[in-house]
Length: 103
Image (cartoon, rainbow, N blue to C red; front, side, top):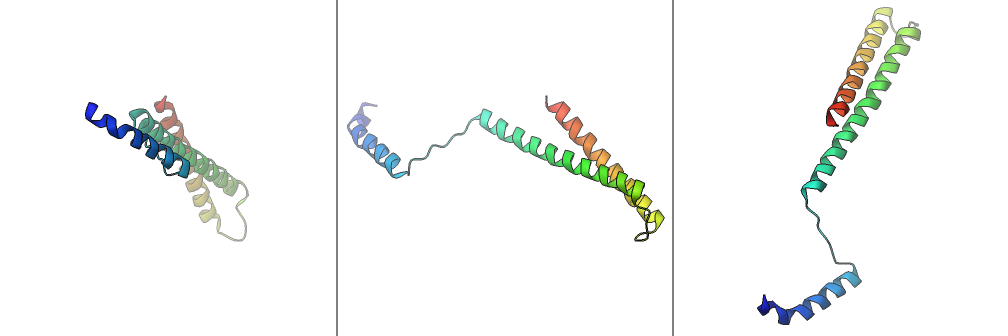
């Protein structure tokens, strides 16, 4: 430890110069930050699943209610409406269950 003391003033000056120029960087690695990053990623995926599931559920419901028109035959609209509604419901349940188990 004492053999590094003569270099200490030059190292302090270098750190100050690097900070003044903007080349000073601090790297953080800790288990808490890694856990926080993983939790944010999970929450982001849950949010995307909930929004997509809600949109699919609403679209499927609207197709079942108002989709019987001249563009698509009735069986296709019914199948599409049930498919979108079911998929949206499943996505909403998945995001709800995932959010409930994280707590």
